[in-house]
Figure (tube, rainbow, N blue to C red):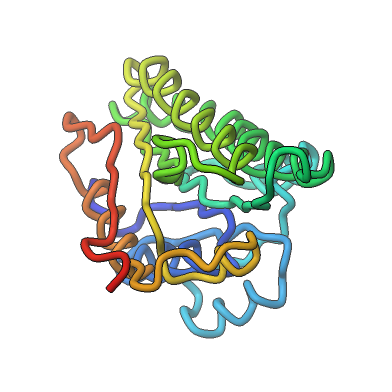
Length: 235
């Protein structure tokens, strides 16, 4: 896909990987709708990127909020389901609230945004022969289970299953679906989740560059899953 003049939606755009995805997409000529709950952070990114970035206050766990965010869009070429969070704890210490917020954000939010964008992309496929590209940001935690990450592991294993199922379902509609599984990345995620992560993590701009590469692949070339890790996570 040539990214110039394309319309992209990035969830969780207020920080971390989401901000970097928005920067890279805008730098390649796309118009980016950044969705997040923290509108003040989105506005600071708008000030940095300029008119190519449109801040949209949205809680991806709320069905009405997602419907409102997508209601004015009649073109979406790219959806990056990036919004996600972790709450790490032993299974017998994990609260129901922490379990629920991870399921709601990491799985239900992805489902709601995907459901909202698919009819738009199907219509684009009927008009142009290519619908668009949906990218899910999962994790290596969707490949390997880890102690104290049971809820987070469950969401990311589930996201990989959702991605594979929708990839097979939507490919005949000219819609690509790709799942990206990074290891440790230098963002605020680990601090909020309760784990310091690897001392020598990957950088957000490197993950974003890989996502751009996946998006720029030829229309009949589908990269369905990518796994990436730091070469020397301990330094």
